Image 1 (cartoon, rainbow, N blue to C red):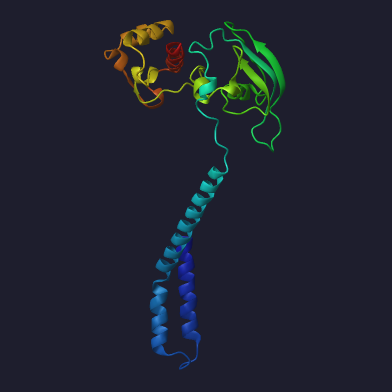
Image 2 (image 1 turned 135 degrees about the horizontal axis):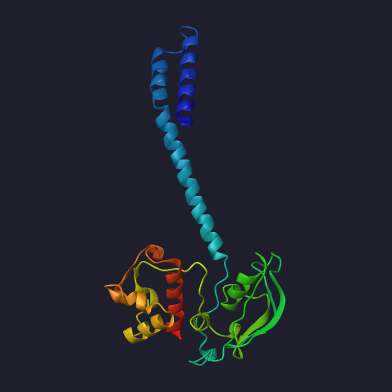
Length: 248
């Protein structure tokens, strides 16, 4: 609408100028040509603005690519000379030593010199106000955020000394807001098709979801809508727990 008003205002100003000039000062043919071009002014302005917007979007794309080139690469997925044992972690003891974490070099520390030990086979609760660093600690455990200083040692292995795949494939997390993907119960529990039906049913029984799945006609092939909307929040959390149990 604003573009149309701008074009209309410009065209009216042009007509007023052509009418107000003395007779004979402007050739009638030139005046008619100016009016003809003025009728197309709206289309020309629209085309020009569209081109400017397209150019801006392309420049933003280049800017984003340049930003990505400045991002540091993640550590390697596998470090052959430092691969943990197949059964690691077996005890589950987590030893944190003088851990300091910040999200960027120019930002303040989120975790400041944490030292503690989580005994294996026990449940440990971490409480604190919003922004106190609870999520950051979990991110540091999975090396989503690399520590500024300090160590995280799980069963006598420093997590920074092994590859990301070896670390993250051995740890699991059950989020407060569970995630399920569109597909089936089987594909959500075993997306890489690594386990047998017996192992999947065993995991479902352990997380007390087996009876609910058996009631459904398709059993393990029971459909899952996007974000698991056809399953309750509690059932989605149990599916996430089943993933963890299946991996172990």
